[in-house]
Length: 518
Image 1 (cartoon, rainbow, N blue to C red):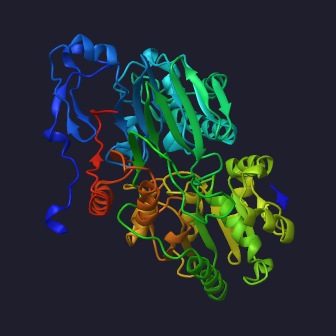
Image 2 (image 1 turned 180 degrees about the horizontal axis):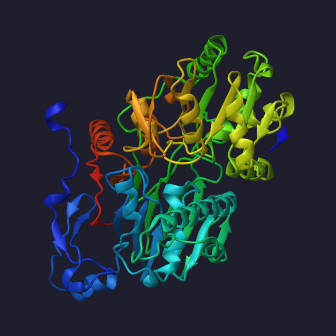
């Protein structure tokens, strides 16, 4: 490595049929607080606006208030009341179109200063990207995350802060006289303050994170350190899936089954589809590389710095000889991904048996002979001089920012270029437009003709598919009440229908402002 029965099928709950109650802990004045939809395990609460009876007050039920990734994939943000405390599950960045991303500036919908703790499922930016902003708005509690997640958080958030600072600087250079100075969403100093509040946890440990509130993190199989969150209070158990990986994902162990729960919040990213067979997907990737070599072009792979980039290197190591990879120049063009590689190396105890075998018998995936880790901008730009024979893995994974856009500008109009999409592409992103067949895309203010050959190989997804989601939920005793999050409506509706047919569970489609009682 060089460094540089159709009629009786339950339907999804209609949140607009619920009794409305006042919002709890909102940032806006009580008179203008947003009303919430309230359910009790899929049944409507008979609480309304009047004060609850004293006996109900004393029971102090666990509640979940949805604020983000409830009808969309990004911006994970769920508020929990438990044992007299308030805490958050995730605090993620909203990603996608410029209009969607401007919503990151909006109020959270609760008082950050009134929160007692934050639990992180994993280190992808759509799950952690607004954590420093939470501190800027008054949060002073502890942040709980799995050990590897804690390390990855620093890398991801510092990169996010650097981007925000650079964008603010560019905007201020263009602002007109009299216009207010732009400020970044948060700074690198804000990130360092954030990290001082992080408390790393091991998988399977039973920790009392607040008086009367216990937390256990279990393996989710999505990325290194990704966790299923299990919260227990007052004899009730809330399970949040985080993002679930498919069984057989390389490097990582499979998602851990959950024995029991009183309410499950489950992701639904690919709730409406089945992935291609992983073995066939790998063969397809090999065929794409061979075709690209024969076409005399380069291969561009938009990939997340955490997870997908490392998996690709794993497959390159495993099929080093079969794919004749020694003839290629392979670039991991992401300073952040290079740092992530070091975290993976430090946490080999989290790898599955197959990965451990590859590390012993094949070239180290993170130290391939012709792998170049390009850190500086100059090194990245130098790749553009290569006309053929380069495999470039670069962020961002949705091609909405990052170095992959520079490579698109140089290569997208060439028919011999092959672009390989290996992950989810959110609405409004350049990646989504290319996957949908756009002939022109706008990059850095310029319209670029898209003549490159495009391939989508869903079998490499770090999210499990409809079958995997149903299997994971179906293994939970009694098939408890279920709320679907982290998915577009088409995916959630399809998944809710399948789960209703199989288990009779009437899944709730979570919406911002909806409240569920556990």
